[in-house]
Image 1 (cartoon, rainbow, N blue to C red):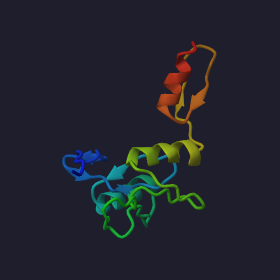
Image 2 (cartoon, rainbow, N blue to C red):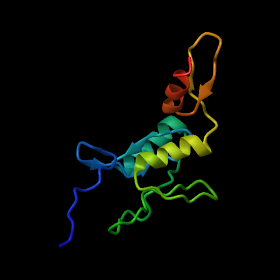
Image 3 (cartoon, rainbow, N blue to C red):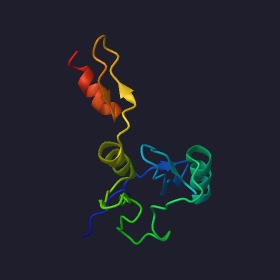
Length: 122
């Protein structure tokens, strides 16, 4: 008898799959509609065109087309959108927006969880 499992949770908000992911370095935004991504890219990043990470818009069963890193030379695939965003922040971005407030430390991190891990040493 085949096993039945609940569908995997994806980056869903109000019932909409956030399949359109901003590819601007350091940006972790994702959107339910391509038009929202296009508006975001134009308003926030000044970009006139939008790179689309979801392929042709269709998703074959079990396909990871919406979660492939499009950074040139990478192409790594992810089972969850948040894993891809974490990968981009960790591997492809030099931005380190999280800093340690401990007096005299000043270390900076590209992910909040890495900052939290570091703060345990103080």
